[in-house]
Image (cartoon, rainbow over all chains, first blue to last red; front, side):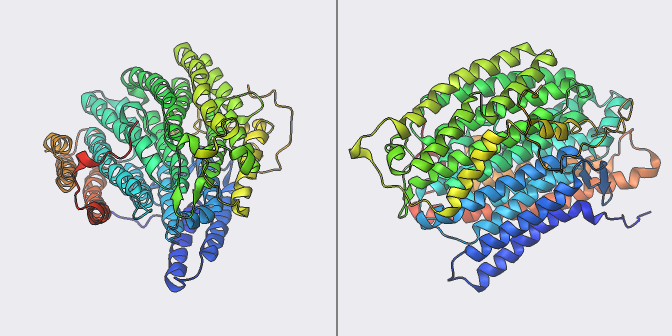
Length: 515
Length: 98
């Protein structure tokens, strides 16, 4: 009755490496407590690099499942995991200097962040709701600890409590949704759920209820609008490197899980599609409008990340509307640019932390241009990419999503996206103005010294933001199979695309090929 | 139970009580998992009815384990705040606005 499942270690290896690196990092921290953390940083980066290389080798591989359908690997999972690994490495690069300046140089940051990343990798790489829930909790519990890492800083502790209470509340909703999916279909497997939905409509009401509850839970993690209330507080209160980390990891993981769940539930599209369209519009608009009045840079960027979640949701909806014609390429592309520009912006803001204090009000950036021209320059490039000014990756990402939305016949979403890009110009401009134009000596704070890690992060982000425009073709090719081969069981014609050779060096082509 | 728990989360002010209400919600979920596992529905073929029932029961165990982990972290955070300001009322958690 029970067989031992076969295990494909190659699929599991990147995740295992991430977890084991975390454990080793913690042991190092334990045995060398008075030393500095450079060894841990080095180890973590090495582990991330190893996992990254292994995953690169799996790009374009056939979709496969292992350990009794618990782990699922397809192009989408591999791409999202690559994005998250890269984002974590970028965060680690600038974390050490920042944590020392804040006087919270706990070596535990790195293992916790690695485990959180491991949870997120589980979450995007599964079709099983049990695994999805476990991954989500591994991701979140580590993040609760991380956001409260600045012990003695009232705002950090407060943000940890808020994040924790609301996060636990939201995961209870997600869990209740899973319970109803189980009740409706008798299985925890999303493919089984899909089959059950097509087979009969007797459990229809239950399934609709289940999807609504799961939307609450995942929408919370991805910071979609009715469930976004925690975002600005937590982004503002948490240490800046943690903010950068969670703005990427938590969002990518939640969006990945959302794509999987909604793909499985496409028999119910009549119910969730209008709801999600409304959520996408509200997310973009409210995120940008509220950001206009913010006086705190991290808070404004928090609302900006809410708005970007809305843009991503537009891309995802376009894909779900026409799963075969419109691949998830532009969403994946946007994730990559979003990672580069967001981490770049947060990393540069982190230089306001010096000697245990940190000022994140907008005017704390005054005079940045004179005192730290390098950081100000990087910040500027990241900001114009966040706005979506043409030569940067942010523009091409938005353009691709805009085109997808039009192609899928969602003009309202496309227009909202365009209008919101214009609105968002104003508050990004405020931040840039504070850094470049305003120069009131009375308000000026000293900036921390730029350490090599921070410089490297900035350089990579700028290269990412600008260079991605030239790498659009290979990335979009890589993404074009993503999402198409998920759920191949039900698909009418099981077309397995030719695997694009994107592991090869990226050719620098002209950038007219976004669409 | 689930509704009761969520009402509790919304109206109570002490984070420990709020947290207890969240636990109540999780227990409601566990109960419904067990109920669904005990009464398999019509989609489940006879040959995998055992697997189906096991999935629900395994889920309950996992949920309980994770809830325990959440308690550990949550009470740690509440303790840290209490030591800092001797008061954990959630209405006082308003140092950040906007």
